[in-house]
Length: 178
Image (cartoon, rainbow, N blue to C red; front, side, top):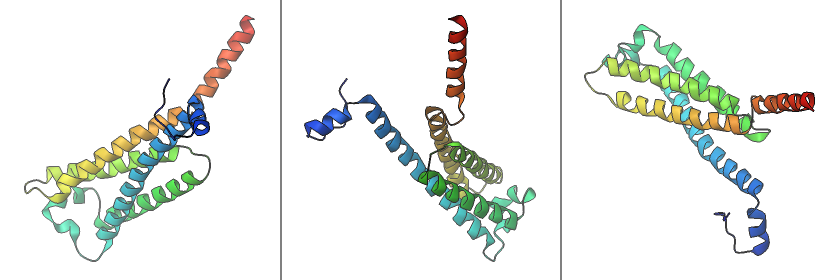
């Protein structure tokens, strides 16, 4: 089967033709692309949290009518900063050692809930249409996309150990039958 990685060097091309090497390269590319998006989303959440904690009464705006019924401005700001920092730290630690997509999946879903709740609140407060009402749903969808990609990595890397457990069960069944 031809591969898409060509160096022009026969020795390197022979290595690149190995399916395990191709799989590893593809996994690294996929992981890096999604991870970069997750970092950007975490930074946006952190900056949004800081903006809410800057002196002023952001929640007095009509766009925050429904959001302010459930959470105070300082709580939303602290949540944004806290989640953003925890997520950035988890991504930093996760990128250094053995990769586990579990913290990434949790971070993506928490981001989806954060941006989704804000989007719902802004959409319910319309009219008028605001920048936040148009941007927050996009951020929520980006989090959902990242969650899907991270979940795919979760199963590819067998982070939950489900495939290993299934292999163990198959070995026991095979040993019992033999």
